[in-house]
Image (cartoon, rainbow, N blue to C red; front, side, top):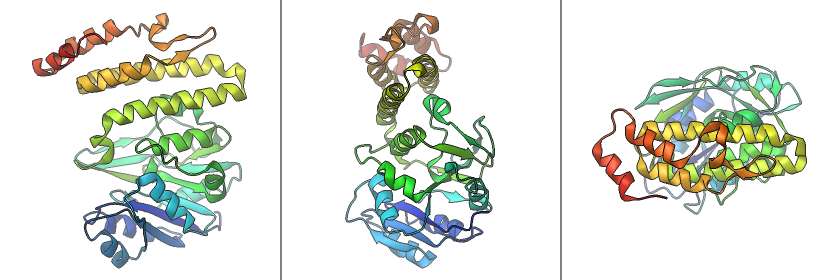
Length: 319
């Protein structure tokens, strides 16, 4: 196992009910971290005090500045060659770090990550079907969805800094955007073990800003595809196939959740997505029947959808 030290970076805003568990779970890992750095992002509760009492080094952000910039600030306060990320409302199971560090014994792996166990309002496993224990190209999987859990990652600090860290223009999906940039030139490693514990609760940022997440996730995808195609023009075909598959899955997900605003937002962003050679609008890709009318009908016909939801969709009119 690699003997390199690591720091744990925890962005925290009004996280007093959760942050002690996050810090304790990090300090309990074997090997122990060089430091657990909690970036207090303008909290109005006693997050900083709770974190310090649990054993963390607390760095004030002067914010709020957002989770991405807060993590960047935490990395700048670390001198360790590896940095692991843990959200303040999440935790790690025993053995999380040791299984990730074992992957980083391979010098070709830049990012190591685990599977996820969700707890709280929802309890389930997220175990993507990926190569386990070896370096691999994560780009195909990432285009379909973000398979790299924010609280399950440890990355080489030099590579993180060279990539420029988290992009502050992304208030959500900032982790997805970073993984996409790193994936263009770096190999990832997956433990296959659900050792990152993700808490599901009502105040979660990703739940509160779901519409924004949909739009920004597609900005991440299209920006990444443009970069990768510029690097390798022969990749056009498989990148287009992956984008079409991602669109289909997002449509299915939105139809299932029954949110009319989500559906309209998704159509809005997909309207400008171009795929293939020769280029064509993704929504006009005949082989997958992504016509706007077809998916509206599926939405309206979906089981267990109330009239109020259908009414909201119809009131918006044709997009």
